[in-house]
Amino acid sequence: MGEAVDANSTPVTPRPGANSTPLTPRPASVSPTPPISAPPSQFHSPSLSRSPLLTPDHTVPSKTPRNSTPRNATPRLRTPRFMTPLGSPLRRALQLTKLDPQDAWLPITESRNGNAWYAAFHCLCSGIGFQALVLPVSFTVLGWAWGIIALTVAFAWQLYTFYLLVQLHENTETGIRYSRYLQIMIANFGEKKAKWLGLFPILYLSIGTCVALNIIGGSTSKLFFQTVCGQSCTVKTLTPVEWYLVFASAAVLLSQLPNLNSIAGVSLIGSITAVVYCTIMWMVSVNKDRLPGITYKPVRGPKEVDRLFEVLNSLGIIAFAFRGHNLVLEIQATMPSSEKHPSRVPMWKGAKAAYAVIAACLFPLAIGGFWAYGQRIPKNGGLQSAFYAYRRTDTSDFIMGLVSLLIIINALSSFQIYAMPMFDELESIFTKRMKKPCQWWLRIILRAFFGYGVFFLAVAIPSIGSVGGLVGGISLPVTLAYPCFMWLRMKKPKKYGKMWYLNWSLGITGLILSVSFMAAGVYVIKENDSKFEWFKPK
Image 1: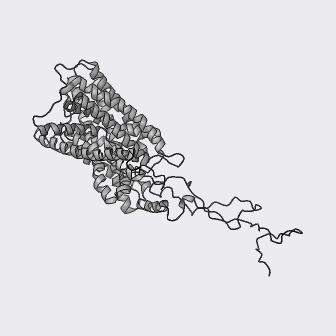
Image 2 (image 1 turned 90 degrees about the vertical axis):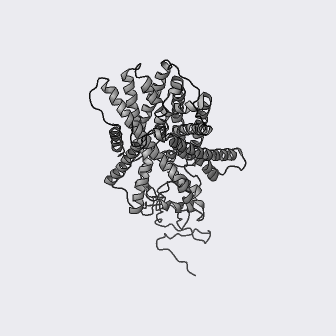
Image 3 (image 1 turned 90 degrees about the horizontal axis):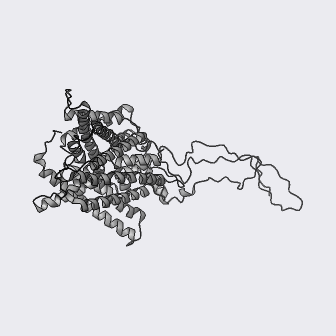
């Protein structure tokens, strides 16, 4: 029976004595192979809108010479190994990516060209600032020994959970990156539980921090004007509410930078100013003689319940000083990542450098401030109020004015990074419904709405000291508890092993402390309510 001959093949004459089986025909061309737009090992964010795994719409012409003999007569579609089998975890994970298709339009994940330097700037700007000035207030209740112990334990604990979040940011098995704190909570606890447990603390932490920054920035702007103007100044100053409004307007103007990567320079400026004014304040305070008649004996209330809640509120103030874990995944999301170069390496490198500087600022500030002023540190305002009240007469106006200016610049810079998750949340509401990015004018409106809403809350709240413990209690699970539980669910350490016991112990202890700190914060606010004047900032 005759053999069918391909019209495009070249006839071959068999050699004498050779096997009668014809040789493999040489096709004139090979069908083009669908290219892969990204390496198979590339980790992607939950959105495939910016960098899809496969782009079959674009083909690349085959570079195989016509005279070469292919290994197989039938071209094989080269599918990445990680795409098979169809029932693999990655296949199921890729289906989850359809839940968030607008990552490329949102401020946090809009740009992914960050590096270790950017991470260090953001971590330092978010990890040090005005909250450090309130630390000596906790020492007035806890005393020397327990104050230092609590500060050391809190620093080590939050640094450990920071490390856990950095390691959990990207899943090496599925290739998914959790670019937001709420996303990783949903992946671990489910959507309903995650929103109940995590949404309110995360949003409250961002909004509460921005409110406190507005209070600090507005009140310090008034002090800066008085210092520059001098004692004999006859110019009428603004009211406290007007100073708050000036700070809020400056913050809204600066918040028009589009995404998290674009404010890396702002975070650098905020980091430098925070380190400088913290160093100046504790060095000047320690260099001068201690105030006459100061004591270091812990101040406790007359009742047993008062003493208990004051101690818990002081521990909550220390917890408030170490907030910022709601930004860890967001900062790491701005970095490129691949299997050979995962983002956790530069992120942890930048975080270690940042927290070394943070430790060098917080511990001398808390210890030196308490040594210099003792129990005379005002509860509302902390070290900043004590510095202006007791060192104005023996310190030059240049130093006083410089410290005020640095605090204002740091508050403006920190406002941007803590407001970014809120900007991201507000814009995501629009992009989910309209299936398109926010227009520039809508972005301006949304960010102005948030900035002036924070201004209204800053005017309503009488002082930072009244809410420091409460904010610390609410934000504590995000910082100290939830990362431990997520590590247990995602990494699955050996049951009854060291890591298993460690994370369960820290997680449960964190939840208990959170409830206790919130109760103490509410109690302190209630007891001091008669001393506060709501909607009358000073």
